[in-house]
Image (cartoon, rainbow, N blue to C red):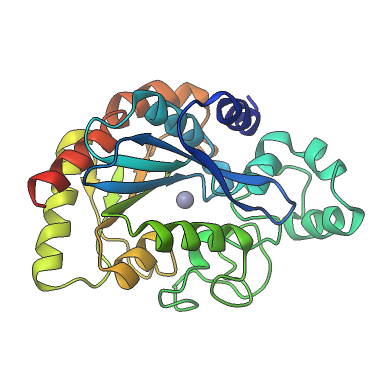
Length: 277
Ligand SMILES: [Zn+2]
């Protein structure tokens, strides 16, 4: 399935507020769609920062269709369109690129099989490119790679700039990043006091709603969630959707159980935020 084509077709047909928030390294639009209304809370949900985690794009489209009964939400269904194109179109996407870009990506990947690629078309892992302890992650690497390369500087990539600028403009009440896999929820990035209590309680509510476990990965930084918590002092969550036993890249066959556990997350988060407003 070409989930990227699905996103653009959905975007064209979408009757609500929508906008292009930036362009990828290869010039593909990064689209955002709004659902809900003007009231509190306003949130941002983003998906598929990591290319091989493209099944979350389908969850995004389901979230948009379902709508948000309280407040409103901007959804960015595919934060990394070039990476997703590499993983789902493979050689066909490479063949359409300028030769220098194609040779670079082939050399970095090392094989013709791009299905496990996580990065963007500069071979930067977007979820370690945000300005939150950038370069201090345990798994960081310092040269182009299919995963874990931090880039030349924080926000060196157009895809991370697009999320940065959207978030700074909107000042959301909370953000959610969807990844795969493992059925876990991450919420902690050094908060203390009232913010730690607030964010931990929200994570516990998301855990009850999804059946996922709250977890605290070690040595992880430079992600969108981390940057949101650090910069805006808002609750921000990473949800690792999908069964841990399923192999990367999780495919469409995992979608029904992902939907079953996650379809209500935008509504649930909005309701919890409203209760503590
Ligand atoms: Zn991920």
